[in-house]
Length: 321
View 1: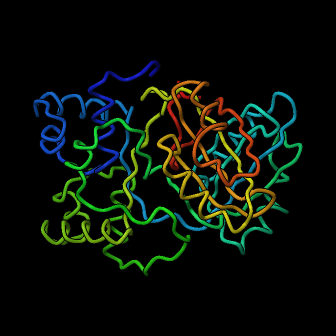
View 2: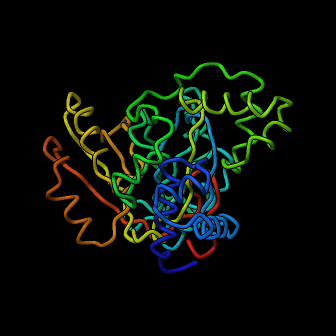
View 3: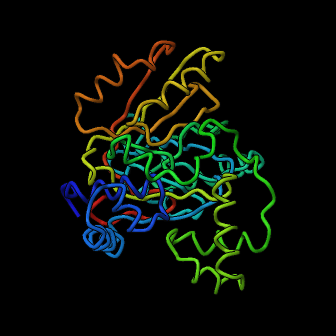
């Protein structure tokens, strides 16, 4: 699909970003729209695959892999990374790095990834790997301002987990919780009756478990959608350098920007890497030159995203390439 979604469709997506399991009735009430209209539009968005709601536990430790590719081999390099089962996203970039991807990577796996796996990628001219030390913003927390404050508040059912939190600090998952998470991984809106059939629990017990997992941060609902369909056609990767003591302050200020879809504090030659989505290049210019989050930043670089092969662990639709 190309172009942008209709205004009501964008607001429905915004509602799902607040609560991916909200009923059409509840969304309609929050938006002040007829329930039948909202249900029809929302169901079509999901059925067509334009929007997908998935459920997942907190992300494990990760690494950002930036590839320098031979001329004309950028898409090949990005596809090779996207084809990995452990890849969360893979973007083709315009700039010195041909592509950027985030992969699940425990520190103990770094030697294998860096020394054995990356050198085998086709079209590779060089690579840089930044270990993600902390998640600052995940796409599950992206709120690009599609709703009014009142509409947003009407839909908040579960307070989101902390945005600036270390990776890997989650409780052990029980067998039943693991079954629920697996069932929600491809469709985060599966109803309690379906989930009861998967787990053997009663519908009421499933409802309580899902609510607990969400409240404790063990289940994070993600709305997977091309930002361009919401009116944010300009996407870029922004890397930031700042004094180590300022990382947390800069990260907190960066997360106040509605354009930030993803951000991580990383090891290496820079302190933060973020993905942003904006409506115009002028808006990107303003973000990089006059936004409040720049106060303690010593330098920032940006590279435009010219294609996405994988987003939130899912391959993108052909039109998004």
